[in-house]
Length: 114
Length: 118
Image 1 (cartoon, one colour):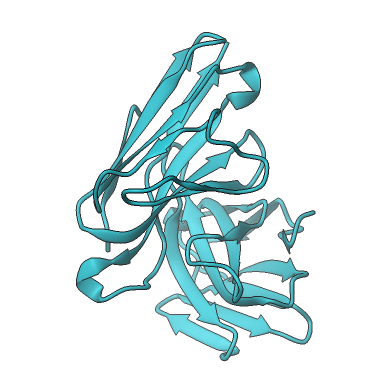
Image 2: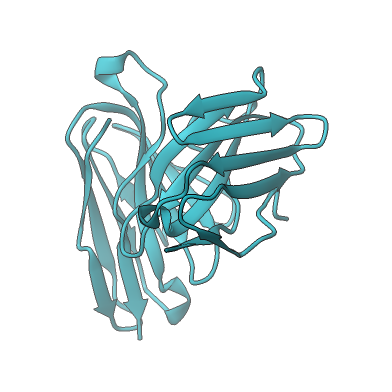
């Protein structure tokens, strides 16, 4: 049973525009959410995280929004750059689980075009 | 942040053989984990590598198939035993909690080991 869902397998965006990646979850025990970026032949690289006590976290070009009532979070990348082309994973941790036990979405392939 | 290296980076193995994957971290970390990413799927936690004691396995994973060692705070190994083509995956080491930062921290991943079983 997939508890973290990324329903868009791919996203194409023009350089300089905003990329919006979406993630939905079903487990109400999730209290910490992370976004990772993954290039081919590399491991996932941490981008940004958000605790369930917040609804927004910003770090440079990356902003994550959390809507707990809708069990939905999104990652905004502004402006998008060619180097942002990668697979983005949404991950979540339940408050009842230990650090390290993350549930991952299937990933969204982002392609930033010139 | 932690720098994680894995050996080998990739391997092609025959059915029925075993492969041991090494994970080395440049800093002492509180917790180490092993994940698997099967082709076209998301990452799945295999087990938590516990220093000085048996690993804690997630549902669907057993010690006989995936023995794990963690002799200290910077090193762990995962063995994939009696391999079959279904074991073809990327295996990733992950760490949390840099000792120098005082505990729970962002979770980092190694570059992964791409395993193909023929």
